[in-house]
Amino acid sequence: MNYEEMLDSAYEEVEVSEESERFEVLKVMGHHEGVRTVITNFGKVVACLRRKPEHLLKFLSKELGIQGEIRGERLILSRKLSSKNVNAKIEKYARQYVICTKCGKPDTELSEEGGKLFVRCLACGAKNEVHKI
Ligand SMILES: [Zn+2]
Image 1 (cartoon, rainbow, N blue to C red):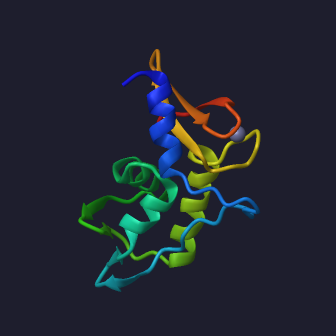
Image 2: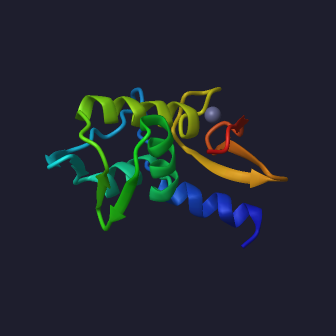
């Protein structure tokens, strides 16, 4: 696949509405099981962000100081956490790794070049270096 084809296929997956408002991150749903927190719609949240589940989990683990395990659509976290807390971290993730800092659109992808990680915007072409987790 060459670069143009990659762009084309990326665009096809993106549903851009003409009057798209500010990007809203899907809120987590879940419950507590003993001392653990189970996020039941983690797969959907990740799909909304168009990122790899493992990447978001790595971020959450570091931010929240917890361990997590992905089981299908679910994410099991090793501590009792409020959904408010988890949502705030996911929004932070979106601001850092999904939303373009230049145009504010979420139509971006992560690309690794020369050992550095970038958020590349498919809407405006901006490229912004981000911290590797
Ligand atoms: Zn942009």
